[in-house]
Length: 198
Image 1 (cartoon, rainbow, N blue to C red):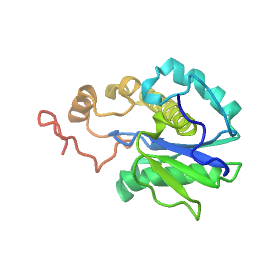
Image 2: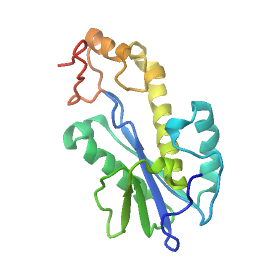
Image 3: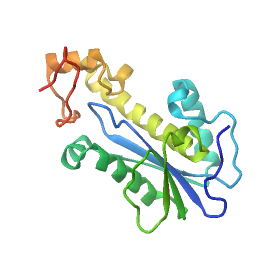
Image 4: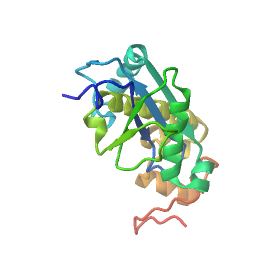
């Protein structure tokens, strides 16, 4: 069972990102604040849920959260500041948009760039431990997937409807055949020895 809060007293926001390992598209991040003692037995790490369950949970999260926000950083910005900094920037942008001021942050992962003067904890695999991080992972994932689905209509050769910009063989083969789009991250490289991008 996922826990509702890391901190018992302070208003706490959970943060997570989606799309860090993609070859194309923005990186998205979300921040979610739930009521204290919030509970949802279905809510879990987005990677452990089907697309159908993630989409069903999204309106529930948005309705039951005290505050939530989603933000993104473009491929051009990712190329400029690197994917790690871009992920933290997306989280910061999401936190900027929260209607309720967070007093404590819990971040999925092991690193974070401090946000203003708000104390935080980094939690490895936090999206499988805390409800607000799990909810943030679902929002970031579903908003990003929708974004990539829309782009796929314009660039059907890259199979973004299926891979959402991740480096599948079909995606990498398409890049080798058709080249990069304006939505690809130009600084990313594929390490697969059979399908290298230069």
